[in-house]
Image 1 (cartoon, rainbow, N blue to C red):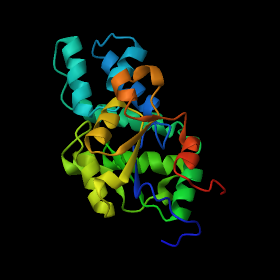
Image 2 (image 1 turned 180 degrees about the vertical axis):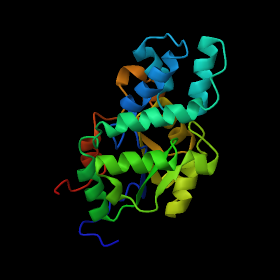
Image 3 (image 1 turned 30 degrees about the vertical axis):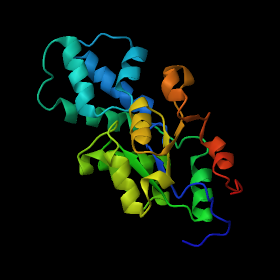
Image 4 (image 1 turned 60 degrees about the vertical axis):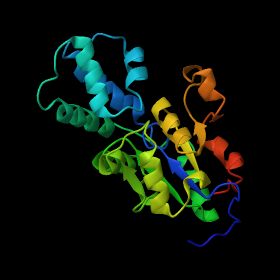
Length: 227
């Protein structure tokens, strides 16, 4: 990769979550899950449900639904949810504000970057394609389903660092969920949080860098923000 600007020296690579971090798809996807759960008798308010589902492995979300309803989900429920999510995504999702500009700046600076998500590959291919971001990523899109470990385990981030040829401690993580933040901290990586500040416990907030959006990372990463 040819660089036209000097690369930052305080980190070696960037690991992004996908939904809610690069692609504005987290709320629509979790809303689809919620709507399908309500058909089974799930009755928590939407906002409370989204807080519980956000950033978690789908199987754990379904276990939460089953615990609330007191009965197992029907066979094929996960597949039903995935189809409902895809339908929601196709009604219109976009890149998060500042995502293309940030990825362009990282590319110019010669900084390796990747996605490491709890979601499956086909979901990421869909959302990246619909949001216009797929062209910024080649092989460096990593799924917990391929690794067999889901956030808050750090193993997905360790895998991503190895694949990029960078030590874990040389990576920074950009996340929008508490499980993702926990995984980044457990991996010994510097974590930038896009969570709503009031949702982050004080002890966790003290260990991360809170940002208002991706545009904040140009200065934090010492990048030239010109497109």
